[in-house]
Length: 391
Ligand SMILES: Cc1cc2nc3c(=O)[nH]c(=O)nc-3n(C[C@H](O)[C@H](O)[C@H](O)COP(=O)(O)OP(=O)(O)OC[C@H]3O[C@@H](n4cnc5c(N)ncnc54)[C@H](O)[C@@H]3O)c2cc1C
Image 1 (cartoon, rainbow, N blue to C red):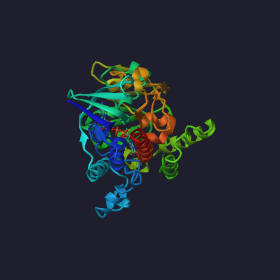
Image 2 (cartoon, rainbow, N blue to C red):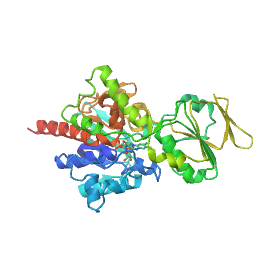
Image 3 (spheres, rainbow, N blue to C red):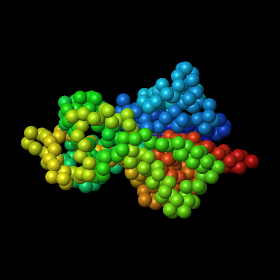
Image 4 (cartoon, helix red, strand yellow):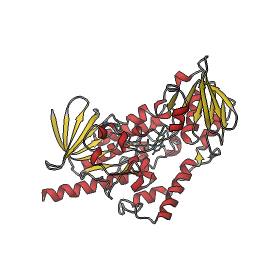
């Protein structure tokens, strides 16, 4: 079967769902594909607490906000913050219901583009169906961009380490000793969750000092991102020094601070922190244990290693692009797509948002604070181009 649509949204996470809602409100005919909120369900663990609060909602029309969701249940932000992953999933489910967004829960296997015939895209789905679209939005989040440092993959025997993205079931590490490599929020949150789920020893090794357990201040980010709706080129047009300052300030809030509610959960004899250390060796012993050497001279005996080493954008890693005809035509810079001020890449009609947009739009675009701005910018541009074509 071959369907046709004006806008095909690939990805049903926060960015994709918000785009579908806005497209409906603008009468842009669209289809949305993907497993609703699958990254949050499958790659973020149960028990995870969000760093963001109730003000980072999904609705470009400001109606189905988290605060209104709370009001419908006679709750206040203070009663639910810090928000849990499950709370956020319930909010997005409510949002989807209120907006009547029907997601086709299929995955795109490949995306092709033909410039000969009216600049159309064809998405081939895992069930064999195909969809033809004039415009496509990729809202694929982080999942394809796991960062596994080559020097660690070289040292640690294969099968003995997992990236945090793939380690959300802590039951299998009950009674085990773990080493977490990395020292930002995820490293410490995984340490807390492993501890609460019965791991017997958790070592955390990172090259830097231990970040401060201090509340992050994101209040300055919202007005900055909201203003981008009127001035989408703001970040890219900043003088390099100012651009660096903005990125550094965001980085400092997110990476030099750990949420204060983590401290009491890791302040115990099970969790041991090794700041200013680096893994330099790892041997599998005949007993099956791993003997890990740190550059400080310390040796640790553990059963499993967890990489809390974050994500790094590389468009080559997105299978649906690599398998289709897009990648060869996609202009990239440092692995990121080169985007215009409407999130459009070098192939007209193909829009890319979320984490891959951070190089051109700023580091905030890896977080849900940017969902509304991204949606409004892309939606208005597509609406205008549809109107121009039909007039
Ligand atoms: C540990 C952790 C904690 C975080 N905490 C916060 C926080 O507190 N606050 C915050 O704002 N952000 C947080 N983030 C970031 C947040 O996860 C992202 O900003 C957000 O998920 C990006 O949304 P998205 O819509 O781009 O994609 P995602 O939520 O990643 O969803 C991707 C969608 O794409 C679909 N998809 C994938 N491949 C295909 C395919 N081939 N075909 C069709 N569909 C496909 C999936 O099924 C899914 O629906 C956190 C991230 C991590 C890793």
